[in-house]
Length: 145
Image 1: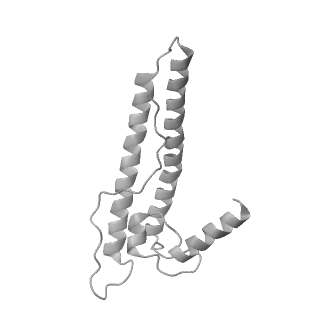
Image 2: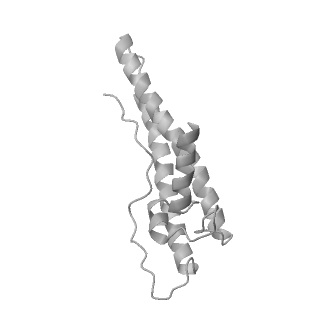
Image 3: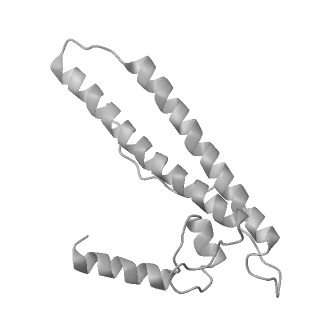
């Protein structure tokens, strides 16, 4: 059975943050909220890595039938490609945790405006506000990148 190449998604298991009226953006409570989301996400990814290693060790068969062997190798290849994306994501999560520690989180790298709590909950490693991200994607599309 072929393994589906799945996209790495942000964690879904957290309670959305509800700021109090007049609460300062990216105060200690908010930073801690995002630190916990990122640490949970990192833990999930590390568990996936462990599962993949165990799966590759347990399922590594030397099939006599070339079709069976090809199917197994394709499945392993897809798993490894997903893990490679997750490895890159782990690096980005660690960089984001460093930004939180340095009080440099939640603001757009391009224009400096607040990225926003809901956007950050959807993509905790976001570094651009919606407008700048949209512009970047349009430029990328125009340049064929």
